[in-house]
Image (cartoon, rainbow, N blue to C red; front, side, top):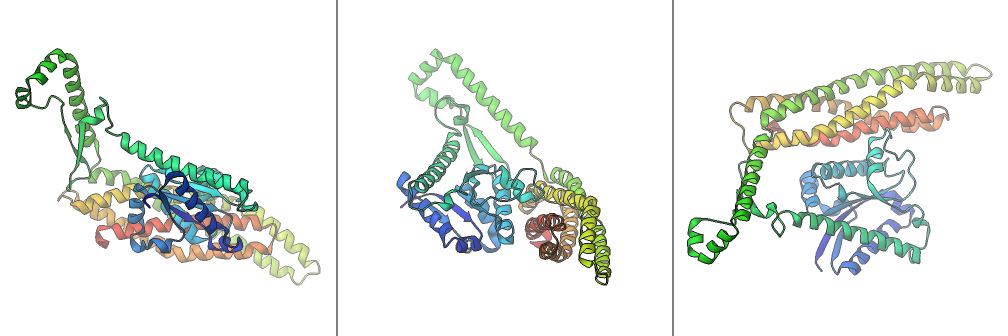
Length: 428
């Protein structure tokens, strides 16, 4: 059976186990319904191990998205806790956004997720809140063979079919039939350039063709104005294409764009330890107070009071940490396409003028990568410690959960940083 589309079902394995395998059965129901509707199949990957993408994950991912591969995350509270789930979503969203294929992102809101909103301090929840979705929180409670559930599976399959047709239609429409100017363009990829050379094929062709076909020449005389108009339009397209190619940024231009953004990202990275230190110092002082309270008769009441005061006192520090965390991940998402484009251009070959510029930027990025690496373990530890300690105090629980989210945002960004390191000229 022909494969019409592909999909990657991203889910927390623990959720599937708790549901008795229901999430994987849903994938099978969806595949069967898609086949019924189209006569073709949709290949659904249910585990990244099945894809065997390994070290080339990002490259294979870019290729897969261009082959109409949908990303379907099954959103639950557990999903946003699991590091692998977060990494999968980050990678897919970044690739789809970079390729202008956000239509391929379709989530299932399987269980209500706290703080799933565009303004969430958890950058991944903010992204998921903006993603197109199908509601499934009530459907997971009904019988899988009920009419309600089968209708929902049909609706989801039909939506994937429609999205596939829309995407294929959008691709086929470029240079489509009729008298559109797009039909006059033939794009020839140039092996030595990121840009494309465009050859404009004029319907009038050349003098030899006209002399060999007198009837065509007569037709041109009777329809001279429309022919001239078409030629002028084709020339305009060629001129526009030339200007478009001239406007494409070169290596030096990309470096100029990236450098200030890198500086801002580096500044955020530098500020974070200061902010977390102030936060931790207040926690350490509160811990000392709680230990001192152990020797007093009303120790429990005193500890509750200390916890409430601490929650209030660390609010400014926590707000700063959240802000820096957001800036950190936002800067990474903005930098990622430009840095990738820059290193890809450099790999194609750079001249004597631009080579030292690229080398200098590569060294700068290398230093930031090392700084991020050195902070990685301590950031992960801080996030895990916050999660473990959140259960100790009702008053501190919201504070520690917010702190954990901020740390997870930073950990998520390391996926992009590691990819840069493999692309750097010095790493090649």
